[in-house]
Image (cartoon, rainbow, N blue to C red; front, side, top):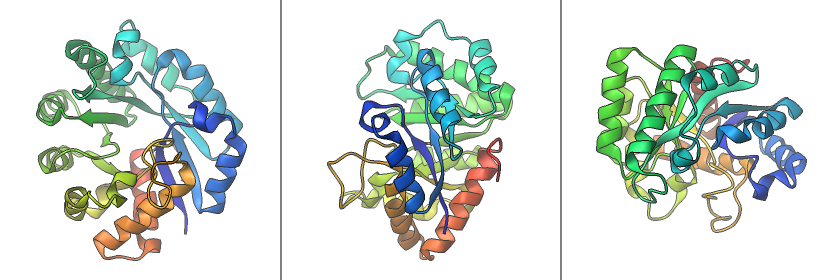
Length: 259
């Protein structure tokens, strides 16, 4: 049984200090591939170096919406140029976060549109961060899809049913993290039951959101196996089957990663 952690942050201090061991533990847990996700374009060299160092790790390029005000000068051309690297397989993460709002909403939105344009040009998946901004994200995705299709995933899904179904309608994938396993997340599990099997992904968002029995501690890619096990239970299939499904979905979306 082989799994993919479609979203982690291996450059964050909690993980990078013991990176070789983190990757080894992931392999031992059956996690064959990982994508380490960019949060600041100015740190892309570090992200890229991690992906170059490990055969099983790929990366994205982008500015997280919470950091959008730090990098307002990042252009579509910048993203496309950096995304040409053979180990860069996605754009983002970018989107809207109305919970923290450490960057103004208009700045977040401008950055989101920049990342969408790059994803459309490069035909690389856009990794979308959505928090307490469901209606506006759905509106933007519908408008922008009408201008030309682009691959995308609603990552670490914790939003409402309407956004999930709108995403699926527009051709997006939906990725579930350790949140799916939390005792008080029955609403998220209910949404996971509705998503077509061919649109499901799993991730850790490590070092955040560790599933039980590690909840409250540092997360790492090895723990995606726990989320996959809960997703299998939710969908009434075996763990081996959910591993096969999510891995096939991953390669369909992250088409630059060798199968």
